[in-house]
Image (cartoon, rainbow, N blue to C red):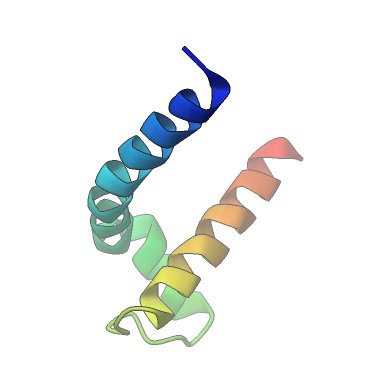
Length: 66
């Protein structure tokens, strides 16, 4: 398989998975706790919610990598 086709199918899979993953993260107790600790709005709508989820994931991964 060519790298271009591989990248396209990877992008397609990401586009399919990301909305479900985003909903699961937004509903998780860890995310709710993280939002409350920062005084943020857990009921934010896209694109604000997506930004919060990305920040949460980034911080979580940084903490795990530490």
